Image (spheres, each protein chain N blue to C red):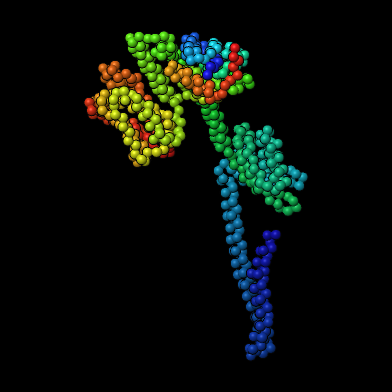
Length: 131
Length: 472
């Protein structure tokens, strides 16, 4: 399945890494460098899935997740948190903010794509506009 | 009024005996004379003697009776005086107190009917002066308390209830004293009331009370001050704790972000997604990947132990299927054992079932123990045995590896103390695994022990309480 995935990640190398892995596996990646950009792109492009870094400058991932969930057009779009946080309660906080799942950094390149595709298959297809 | 009983007594004791004697005399004496053989002249003579004898006997009788009566009267008088004296002494001798009787005249003027002499000691006014003018005493009351005094007195008058008041009074010598005055009213006819009362100097008690009150206020101030200090200290501690948590989170993030790139891109290269690799490139990149994974383990372990030390690692108690947990962990390490051609045996007693604990932590401990056993064993077997011992679950991991020297056994569970620096290069590890195991075990309310035969193998034994109530 060829999916459009919005990647909200401020670290350039991490963005490149995830983009490379996903695109090599046939998906289309829309990059966004911070929360506001990501929210704007999500509303405009309605991707199949949103990968969301939690530690972002100015607006953190929890706030971004809540903002995304406030958009009815994105109600069925899976949001997967990608974060290096491993402090107690982080997982619960991400889920409470509206994320559907949680992938811990550092990502495992051997399993990362399969994990993301799992969320794509289990949360239905979004409303991506095929351009 | 007092005369009535004594008159009755006089009638009974004097007049009645006289009437009886005189009556009997008149009735019987002439008949007695008639029995005597006397002529008329002699009879007249005898009658005169009889009359004289009557007067004499009567006088004697009256004398005797009067004497007895007067004696009794004097005795009564003495007893009365004694009783009065006793009451007076009692009233006058009351320590720091005096007793009184008090009334309102018909026109409403207050008047004392009686006062014991204590009033002179306590108020500096003579009893007779107060008896003449009750105002002398009333004018000593603190003017501020006068309305309260008047209200209390009218209430007692109106409701016929006890009067009770503590009042500040200024003695004749100018000294202020506290008096506790209480009295009970009783009716003496036509609506007039008399209060029987006692007044006591309570200045010392008042002073103690005031001192106590002051002490209380002081204590309250001190408690408030200390509470503020503690709150500030708590805030500082909490801020420090938050800083520590934030530091751990940041450090974890900052260390993992570059690792994310290293592990990620090495993985991509090894997957040959970016192009084919030759054998040497593959070998070196595998080394990079293994080292970065080791670094990640190290970061995870440091983070774990920091979380435990900071009290941030929470234990989530739930029913644990021990059997399933053990098999899950064994499944995870099985590839490692197979890679080294080691036999991995599992012996679970049938009684091993469920207990209340934290499954994730139990699995973390077992994974550590099994990884260690496989890591330090070159040939032979690694055996996991689980069984029940009294109220505990006991899981042992036994290996046929290099073993531990007796002197090193005690250092095993200390952070960053991997035994023998020579070995640590060969057997890569963070040196934190067993320290984490011990701390986790303690959090679960259990114990962990190691025994070893150097050169032959080691046994690590984990004991966990089965009943949650035994774990605090």
